[in-house]
Image (cartoon, rainbow, N blue to C red; front, side, top):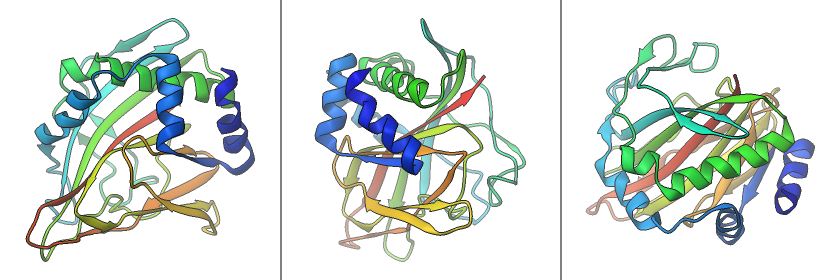
Length: 236
């Protein structure tokens, strides 16, 4: 897809890219549509608690789904656990983690399908594959008085996949949440903050590490949260 070529070139040159909300909306609307975005974003109000947090935190909610993506098909797979080895997740890795599934209407809806089409086109140009194993995570990181929310409690890390998309869905009453990207020696390559819905980070997971600083409530008397969609693509 010609319009995505600058992102492909950025991934190849630097191992990551930041995408503005206007750019992301333009690319998504070129591929499909995001007409159900209001319902898509509202579904973050219906996530289940992440009960596997080894740090004892109760600040993370999520839903999860797995897809197989090929050139001609995007097919949701039966419910299965999420697994990362401790090589990639020293905090919560090494066990099978079962999360509540992404709601069917959201997983098969226009926005999710279009996001997966976008990733298929972009990541396919950056590193072609016959088929992709795709994992989709809806995350809400909450921040409240006396408890910061940690988007990446495992610290700066890799996910053990080929490519990662982090798409901001909503951000309310929080400060910080700075995304940083590092080379494999730990040197920082860049940093930015996702602040507007549709802003996104793209990562070549084999080449760089990434992390996000904790978030705190701007007004401690009001709820604060950071909602993101994380999509990982791994060659099947």
